Length: 206
Image (cartoon, rainbow, N blue to C red):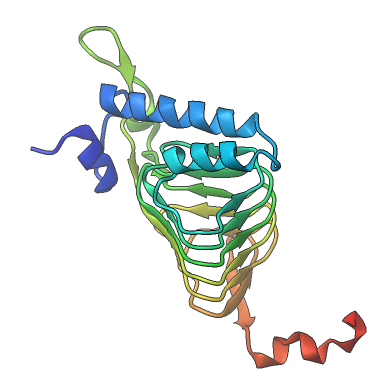
């Protein structure tokens, strides 16, 4: 029989009030707050916090802060991942981010899903008087070499392929194929990113 943590990570209906999950969540929230109380010149202190908060990360991780993780331990970050201000990851299901992924300000990865019907979504009361709700999650995968621009929301169940650019303010609710420029709400592919997008063709920038 699966425990609540195993149910959660498997994308099954689970009880978020479970004692083990609550303790993990509180710890992640405390570590996030500790990180947010540091500045970028406190390199060793930040590294120590991140190693505990998101132990599954590669070299060169740079999170500007503030950051907010629901669990942290269920997120995997590749090498040279950068996130600007207000990076939020609700990782009740696994979040996998590849190498060299950049996030603009105010980006959110949200794996939780709640029932559509309020009769199933509202809080419930246990025999001991404590309350809980039924929820589940869907994983998120972001391939390497992507740029996620400012104010992007990525919802559960989405895979973004390698080399994509997701335009500012987009809400990504479906998979995006590799090497795509995608924008909008809901986010849609505009075109493929090709060699013609090279800076060498943008002489006005030099």
